[in-house]
View 1 (cartoon, rainbow, N blue to C red):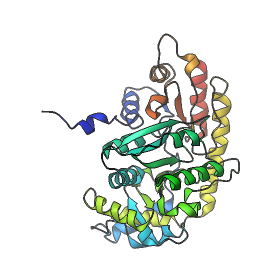
View 2: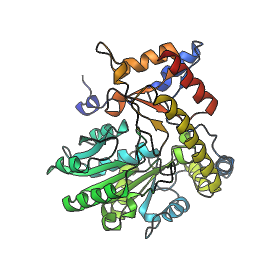
View 3: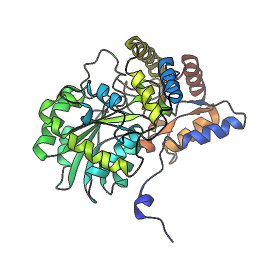
View 4: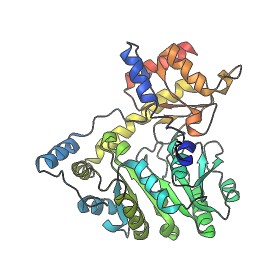
Amino acid sequence: MKLSNKIQSVEASGTVKFTPLIQKLREEGREIISFAIGEPEYDTPAPVVEATKHALDAQKTKYGPVSGIPELRAELAKQFDGYDADNIIISNGSKHSLYSLFQVLCDPGDEVIIPNPCWTSFPQQVKLAGGVPVLVDTINAQLDCEGIEKAISPKTKAILLNSPNNPTGAVYPKKDMEQIARIASKNDLYVVSDEAYHIFIYDNIDYKSFFAFEEVRDRAIITKSFSKTYSMTGFRIGYIAASKAIVNAVAKCQGHTTGNVCSFAQYGALAALSLDKRILSQWRAELEKKREIAYGCVSKFFDCIKPQGAFYLFPNVSRYLKNGKTSEDFAADLLEKAGVAVVPGEAFGMPGHIRISYAVREDILKKGLEKMTEVL
């Protein structure tokens, strides 16, 4: 007996697999500082927790609409000019959004162009839909628009963007997004824009959602998440904003996979949308300060592009890789010798690099960087 070719072609998540390893080492008594997990340090805001508890007390524990509770969808639609609740579908986090999207977009053999390096799940989500991920290397972490256009074939179905980017922290400028919009329109392609880190923008950069380009709004599919924005990673709440045709297709798929998203968690998400915006501004300011600390240290040892958003560094560690060693070996050595966990670049399609998350307490960040410095 054998498993399907599809599942055998898919790689395990390069970030999720670190969680049990870190837990195991800690259980053995090792002090491990983790820069591996892309999770904000902050507690989930009290109003979100209280609204979730209230929903439980009110018995909001039954099946709900597959697309999400109407109040949450209507509130989210206010972010998107001209959209209403029927243009929004709630998902079990961004991973679920992307899984469902590629299930409804891709026929077997259809291609999706993905700038590289990329989030570890992007290519695997395409493969799970029977599609073919086509990776186009970025240039200094920015889009190679000409390379993307050259990669288009008769089988190309979509271009997948992620700005701010995981793992590099790059923010794509308006001119490049406009060029992608023109390419997509010219070649009749969808553009899936993962904007999970949209509030974490630094240096007063003029950030644009792909939704801003009205001329391609019919082919733009925006995915966002409550996980990073509101420090609600365990709630598993994400959403898609798109044409009603796309949303209806995703709802059809979701109806046969998960059904509705956790009912009471959605009320917590609804409360998150009413939070004092100063909370998010404070988080962003603190992360920008941590970026300066982390980049100042890491750039002494490695070639590293300064991130403009998200909360990651993606330094090139190639100069430390001797005698055939890989960045996976480097990460393993760092874990063993320094007790510091990072994610090797192989997980993101870019060997010779490591990803460092600085979304940790400042004292922990400084201590981990000191331990790295001692080893290096």
